[in-house]
Image: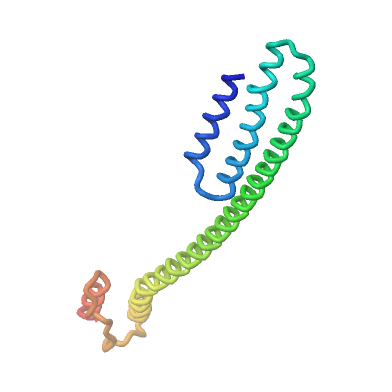
Length: 171
């Protein structure tokens, strides 16, 4: 019994040291207090009566021991209910947070895809437009319908500007 009482105190101390102030910590204190009453009756009255072999004393303390046990059980059940309610609340808050973060990630993904799509369209257009203009003018020259006065934009500082300058020299 002594070892169980010491374990009970050790576990109580652990929870008091590791729980933040609030309903759970208060519930563990209530459980501890009612548990101490039960252990005290057991150690101070029941065990000495058993050691003495005093059946009348054992019978007399039995009701007090059962009352202490029942009171402790009520406090334990209340603590379990409180902790269960708080756990459900935390789980609900975690689910809400996860849902909002998931929604935020989907929005960011869609926005990123739109930005990347727009950038790809702009880059593709800036590459294909001068290339298409060069192709049309080369087709016109190849079929004899070309106008030798047509000039391409050679002001670009990339390969298309170099090709346009060569085309303008050729035409």
